[in-house]
Image 1 (cartoon, rainbow, N blue to C red):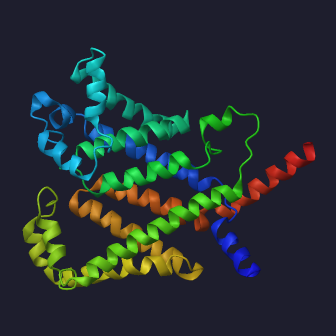
Image 2 (spheres, rainbow, N blue to C red):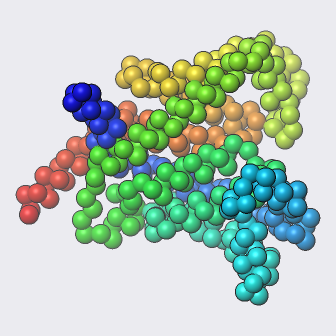
Image 3 (cartoon, rainbow, N blue to C red):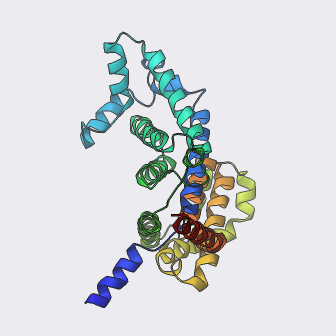
Length: 316
């Protein structure tokens, strides 16, 4: 039993560098920045009552209340602003600018913890208020920002770290948060792939076809799709295999890199073929942060950390 506990502890608390945290912070900062910019022209049309509140009107509010009355939403902040005598448009504009600033702060690593918490909370309000027009990108952005705000910050590449005389990383705590993110992604992919595999639509290519012709994701000309329709069954089966097998093959050293590359290629393909660029970006960021550093740069990072720790100990 002692050996089992030691192996379990070694699995759950591996020694990691902060490279993956740095990549996650920069990637999510860019994601949040692009997300805010993509909503700029439609911000008031989606959430302002004067514009019929496409996303956060009475219907959306009622559907949200069926889940829970305690789910954060923009209407709470608008009501708070109204109680203070601030106009709705001003409150909504302020929220948009705060999202933009939070994204920039994460991108350069300035006040990282504050920006991560603020970005997560405001994005959660926006995603839940716009439930009628949101899709998978909002869920994965919420997940990524949640892990980032809880993870050990700042990382060595941030401006916050440069302001500190000495930054000592808890490598086992860094490994714990990365491990939880890895397990979370494995569960998401496994059950997503399993759900796809249970129906016939992905095996015969029907769901693949429907995904590519449904507005507003119909980026590719239908004539091109008709010419290449014979690859839809193979592509659907490949997606099922990639997602279901992710939880098993991503852990082995011999299969991790090709499986990760295939998953990244799948998301790049989805982004280009369906115009879901933000969704592709957040999935690439989460996957590389979770499993990329082990192959790309962690060995050099570990050597740097070991050297820094030795110098710190010798100086004391």
